[in-house]
Image (cartoon, rainbow, N blue to C red; front, side, top):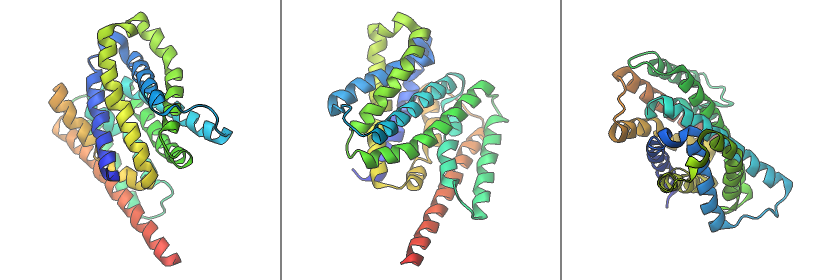
Length: 282
């Protein structure tokens, strides 16, 4: 599959899985959802790839860092989804990849993209339907972790040429999240209907998307990856509307689109700058 198709397939799986998790919140809570999702995904990925531990310290450290970022991202993102419409939570989370698109830029034009993104956040959080402040804060933490994961995931994909690195990272993230899930849900985590729905969520939200995205990161620079995921806020808002019946006000829809357009513009500008540098040096 072409790399852009892998990225967009991962985006769709992430958002559909996030929509399904709302059915689990009343039973096991956000932390329980995260524990089930990561643990089940770790079982599937470990069975498929059998990663082992016979790697150098640097590779193990990169995998552990990626797993830690995944665990913190999931815990904060699902706390945000529990408090916010899916489109709003995803838009705030997406500020992490947007920051990567702007990182290190010295172009004056990129300031305009940053202003557009800031305007989108203002429209999203201060107009129309009121949004929970704690939910917005959790979504921002998730954005920081997702941005960090893109950078660390690129290193992991370069050091491990198959899915073993991802399997180890997800397994480590599952171990980190499990105490929080047990504290919040206890034995409710083991109910058959809960496990069945959580397995679907794990496949949609973890196994397929992270496998797709890691393969795409092997072929694409992080900035290009950021452009391709720029539609995630809009996808999340549409799935929230169609699947969950979550409505955003017109100004909030404008905020979602503003953040997506700012990310596309900033990342494309960075790509052109990098191309001119390579041509000039040759």
